[in-house]
Image (cartoon, rainbow, N blue to C red; front, side, top):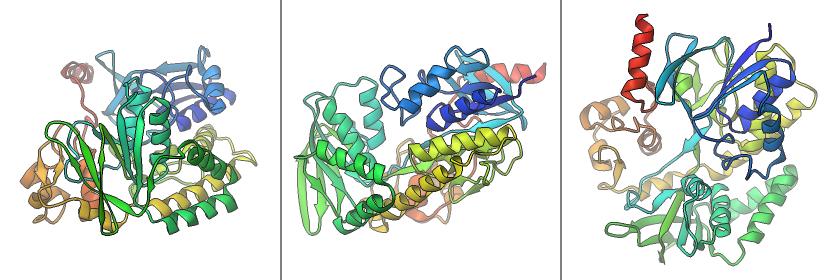
Length: 420
């Protein structure tokens, strides 16, 4: 009988793992909460993908007799050590596994600043996803601010959709960006060419460096943005503000399954195996590094899960992707000065309207939760938990089931199945 590998997530890491496992003669079950494969990086579905790796993997998976795909299927936790609790079609379905590869990706790091809760303010990746999902922005004014390469990618997406990009505001100074460029040129030539191509596409758009957000302005909806560079404040009128400060690994399911988390990411060994012998992890959930890292790790994870060694080409590709990830982290890690964006009356927890002033007297995440309800709203700390880690240094490593909002019907299904 063929070995069955379950994979959670159909982004670059998940598709790479799935293709590798099928090529090796295994059966796979691919579980994803989106209606189309591709994850956040390849979002858009097979009809819109431009990356040949995505198309090739999906062409192999689609209709393959050994491939089961569960789209629109959200893993809300685990029941026991080897069963995933999956909500699909409004029903709760337990999915037992023997070998599991987690490719749960990442989520945006949202840092609070005055006005960040106004309609029209999104994350940089969030705006990109909305546009790819069909939200019209043609003729609308967009400001993109924060730090990291995602700002350029979002600007490109908005520009191609017909938006007027009023400015790209990068927090890092030009000297650091120049060093990043030299780093790309010396060790990551293809990435350098991609960056140069993006800059060429975005020529003519003001690119403000060494700057930070002061506030988003508006009464009921966003009307403009104030940006500070040096001692000077600049006002931009806009309809959308995409604020992006990087990504944080999504470790919710790994924590629920008891996998070790180190420095905010799933800890893995050279074979991408987690601290559990039957679970592997790949992609952004093991550390932020982009599509090449995800593809390389997904392949190695699937091979190791099947007891197969990596090829001579796999390990150098992973080393190169890790070197790029380290360069990204050195260049674009949010600096401590960004804490100044969040004033005493700035809301930190959007679900429960908890301000920074209310959080300041507390010593840690748990104490603050008990006293203020921070992190106890619908998002369960998925946004404000990372913000509090940045602002106050609080660890946020508890995971409670369900890890995602679930319907009462699905939870009832699980309860009935547990009683049977």
